[in-house]
Length: 411
Image 1 (spheres, helix red, strand yellow):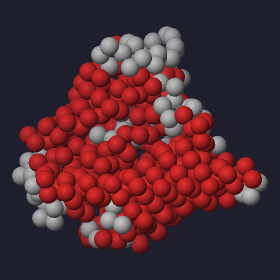
Image 2 (cartoon, helix red, strand yellow):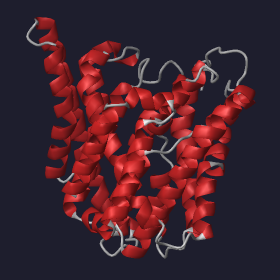
Image 3 (cartoon, rainbow, N blue to C red):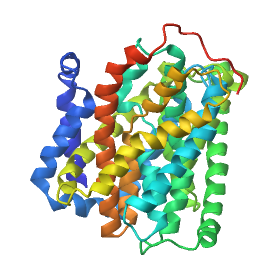
């Protein structure tokens, strides 16, 4: 695993020499990392497969996910729901569970696994929205600002909502890769979730409140706060795992709790400054690029397997119908127009969240089910890059309404 990480860091270093120039050619950081990963995968062959299927790799990936979830939880701009409460709540609490359920049902018929728990795990892998590979969409003026705000909120919170379900599904898989009794799985998962909540809230609130009081008293400065924000997800993860809880769920909760502690009553509609976020944000960028490198290296492994058409069909439906229909249903009675609903349904890029969940699932599954996860994850992410990177920008000007009024807050 160490050689893979070192190679990814070298590619990141090379990218920093020409990042601005590459952007003028529409070559983003993730594209560079995927290309570097493909080359590494061709050179290393089976070595990466063996390194990924280890306890050390599992802990590293969980730690990376903890940092990403912490940043997602605190980085939503414009307050917790970015001023679009009604539509954002519909997406997170109605469309998200429906989309997960749709992907799960499709998986039962198309994935070819003997375990229903595998279908649930794969659904958690392929459905989280992540704008890291399609960040330009959130800055595209052809899309109404209200839509971009809602999508940013969804991207920030949805993977944190998926995380407990994903953790439960992994428990259900068991060591053999076959589903355990749901009651037994819940009995194991509930204490882990409670520990995650208690530790996440405790570390987040205490740290945020202590820093707020320290700033008010003139005892600390922005540079020290940046260091504290890097340490919070790492400490939270370590404490949660040590107590038998879920580390990355605890880190997400710590992010929300930290924002409340740090901002106090202003947390509902005020953001943490970029000066304080800078260090942990940069750390999340580096870890994200490492994951794109690993994804590129996995592509060589994926193409060793036959491209089963049911898996391709599943990936296509996960990107389209499994998202669009739940979004349409969730918006019934909302102020969102038909064009808004269409755009919200179409714009749902997949990225690092899917890669991280996929790697964790791969580490827990038997060889056959692990192959399903890796292949489907790869198909979905590649399909997302094509859909969100090519088709959506072209169609945005046709689907976007001329006005850009905010949604009302009515659910």
